[in-house]
Length: 160
Image (tube, helix red, strand yellow):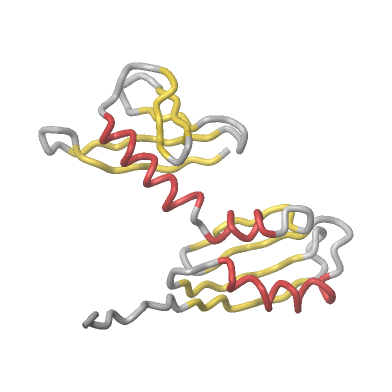
């Protein structure tokens, strides 16, 4: 289960806190507020849509969807897990600067380490500086890797 907290403002400028929950990767996201009903959200053809529940403002749905994209789908742990789904059992953010990765049984860390270290930075385009701690499935072996990615910003040149 994944849970996020989305902070926004209502049409009057009052703070609004929504709880975003996804039971598993194949379930839609559920958005709920303290006193409001639960609604279901999903991304259809690149756009966030409300599937059920009391109709909410489209701006709230778009904002919550953008928040999910930024904090879940574009996250370091998920991108790493998606890149090596048969080799990585779990990838979890321990803190803002640390991610713990646990491999599946049968993964030889001595063989996986050079591949992982060579290609993991290619998964990201934005600035990232995080410590990756990679463990065997039974935590008997491990290695650390500092993931540092500097986004390449194109310099704009005048067109004559």
